[in-house]
Structures are given as C-alpha cells and as structure tokens.
Length: 105
Length: 105
DNA sequence: CTCAAGGTACGGATTGTATCATACCTTCTG
DNA sequence: CAGAAGGTATGATACAATCCGTACCTTGAG
Image (cartoon, rainbow over the protein chains, first blue to last red):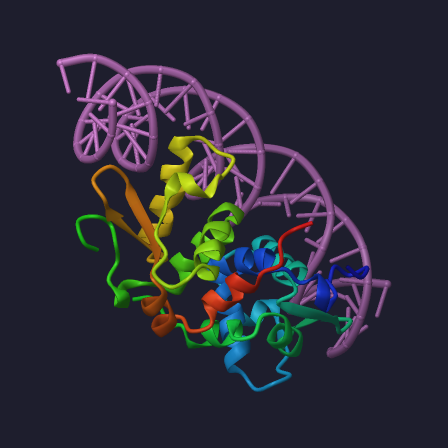
C-alpha cells in the first residue's frame, strides 16, 4: 500500500475485490467506469449516488483500498479512474462481468 | 426459485453471487468444487470448515440461493454440486477466478 | 482575502452478517 | 426398534457494514 492507500498490483486480492463489488453502489461506480472510454476520470460526486458526502468517501475508500480504482489528486478534487490494466492481469474477466451486468428492475 | 431454494439459471444475479463469494469460507467451498472433477458431489460436512453445524447450514443456504451450488437430496444427506454450466453461461470466467485463487498466508 | 466546491475525519445510530447452542427432524444401519 | 449421522429451525449474541450529520481541511475562483 502506498501512502495514499492504493495497493500495488500484486497486493490486489480476490477477497477484497469481491467484497468491494458486493455492494450495489460500488458496483455501479465500477460498472460506469468499465463502460466508459479507457482512461476516463470522474469525480466522486459525478456519479450521483443517493448517499451523503461522508458515505461517498467511505465507498470510494473501499474501492481504492481494494485496488479497483485509483484516485489522483487534482488539487481541487480527486479524479477516480479504473485500474483496468492491473485488474485484467490480476483477475481477468472480472471487469467484463461487472460491465455487462443488467441494471436491476 | 424452486421449492428447495434453487434459482433458475436466468435468476442468478451478479450481486447475489458476489455477496456469496465475498465470504472466505464460502469461497473455499466453491474453490474446492471448482477444482474437483466435473460432477463432483460433496456433503456439507466433508469440507471440514471450522464452524458449527448450524453455521454450516447457513453458509450452504446462501450458496444455494445465490445459484452457486445445487443441493440434491440423497435421503440420508444432501450432496452439494457446483452449478458449473449455469454459471459459465451466466457469469463466464468467474469460476476460473475463484478456482485460481492463491490461499491466504 | 473570502467563499464555494470537493473531500475527509469523527461520532453515533441502524442494520446486517456470522456465529453458536440447543432442540428437532429424517434416513440409513444394526 | 434404537441409535447414529447429516441437516434444519430457532433464538441469542457479537461484530461489521452502512449511513448520516457535523465539523473541518484544501484548492481554485472571484
């Protein structure tokens, strides 16, 4: 883990990633990033999740510490990007499953 | 859902499967079944999980209701089998990830 | 400098999950 | 029939996860 809480590629574990993806809100974030063009950057708030700011921070921390996303300091805000390459090497096929999920009724 | 709590193939959802696999004990069960020969049948108790019988029933219920395993009534006991075909069609690649997981230190 | 925007940290309420002990049911075996 | 083996149901407990409000920090814009 670097000082900002990002695990290195070899530190990404299936357990942590599955736990992170078990939550529907977090899965939705990953789904949107996985469907977006490679390298897409989004702010936490841009996803329009129906929770408070504090809860948002909580969810993005779990996504970051599991290795699913990278959060880059942009001064004013923090840009979230999907760790596509790392994940495709470490857990191939997983992002495709999340990206292909059909939204709940 | 049939009367024994098995979802049909089209009722298997990514969310339920990921939640089931988020637990290390349940993931271990799926891992052992995924590594075993196709069609392998195991009883709940045969996995040697370090929990009580009641907890065992709880975990196998979640595995069954998520669609990961099928439990067949064998009179004396219930045989658990992996729903390999259904899962490979519905969530291709997922079982491979679980089967390939390297055990925790 | 001041302020709004984007995030984080903290404390607390609520809910969910994992766990167990106990009691009970069913089926095979002797 | 009696017992053992494999599971299930129920109720209780302990822990973890989710969520919020509030307070606070940092940065960029005016």
